[in-house]
Amino acid sequence: MLQIIYDIIGIGIGPFNLGLAALADEIPSLNCLFVDQNTDFDWHPGLMLNNARLQVPFYADLVTLANPCSKYSYLAFLKSKQRLFRFAIHEHYFPTRKEYNAYCRWVASQLPSLQFGKTCTGIFYSEKRQCYGVQLRDNLTRNTGCYWAKHIVIGTGTVPSIPVGAKSIEHPLLFHSGTYLKHKEELLLQNDITVIGSGQSAAEIFNDLLDCNKADTKLNWFTRSERFFPMEYSKLTLEMTSPDYIDYFFGLSERQKMATLKNQPVLYRAINFSLINEIYDKLYLKDLDEPAQSKNIGIYTSCELQKIFLTDDKRFDLQFMHKGKESTFNQSTGAVILATGYKNMIPDFVNGIHDCILWDAKGFYDVQKDYNVGVKDKTIFVQNSDLHTHGFNSADLGMGPYRNAVILNSILKKEYFTMEKNIAFQQFGLPSIL
Image (cartoon, rainbow, N blue to C red; front, top):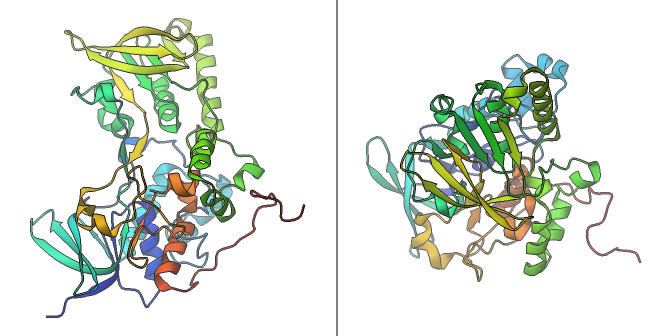
């Protein structure tokens, strides 16, 4: 029996590869398969707080900025749920995280190219077939099989970034923010809780704990940043979330790219301005109405976590360095939430095609302008692994459709999707007219 050779096999079904599958579904010439080891699509379930919102607007969905006529748009989702008028009247640019997750699950339910519950165990290249063999294991039956593809798109996402001092400690009350809701019930039984981190997740968790901590519970928030940076949303800054800026950034030297990223935390790792205000309002009212409880709440900047010790009484002793005072201090706590972000990881399944992939001197993917990392003619692509080559837009949900359009154009070897260019009023590179 002749085996199918897919045009694309996508490994990992997060928002980016889901968006790629949705765009590809409306291209008749493409035969695709997307696989994920999870049983279904569920985006950051451990942070699905009731009032948490996206940091991108509703039109920055899976498809609209590449194909506004797609049947998989967010507005099409609202229409199908008979909620379009309510959404319009609500007049809120930024959907809740729960709404976005429901939207993605709605898209996923309609795509025949998706297969959940399948783990990629390896990839190899067949010179005879001139394509890639993708080895998959069915997590339910444990059966394995080999699937063939002309192109591979790796979208396995990022993994929690855990401070070195915490990696060797196994304790249910020391955990990454991504599993917050799983631990919340036990967390609320503690007499003191510490949140570590400076981004949106840290702020959302601290804000949630403000609503439910007891009067005698100590709640502390530490960040190594010198202040709590709000996300930059001015219009000229938003012009940087564009193909124009990606092209500019890609053309910089490696040294200049690293220096530029170092100065851009407010563009992609900061906190919603409205959330900062909401936290402040709650602190203000607690100080008025419950001054004793207010004294049990602490917020500390410029404090870098250096070590974590588990004491004999199963508490945590945290050692910090105050970056301004250049002095260390210790903090005792009963629970630690590490809102310390995520990092890229090279999956083990690429070992079999290591020589087929472009690598840079630091061992990262050497991502080309069209997101290709394949030594052979544009056959391996990556999602959200291009921060060091394409800039801060790498993890931006709103720029996912642009990257997917570029990938599909490259695979199709034609401009199937026409992306807008020269959208910015400002010019990021050298002036064209001096």
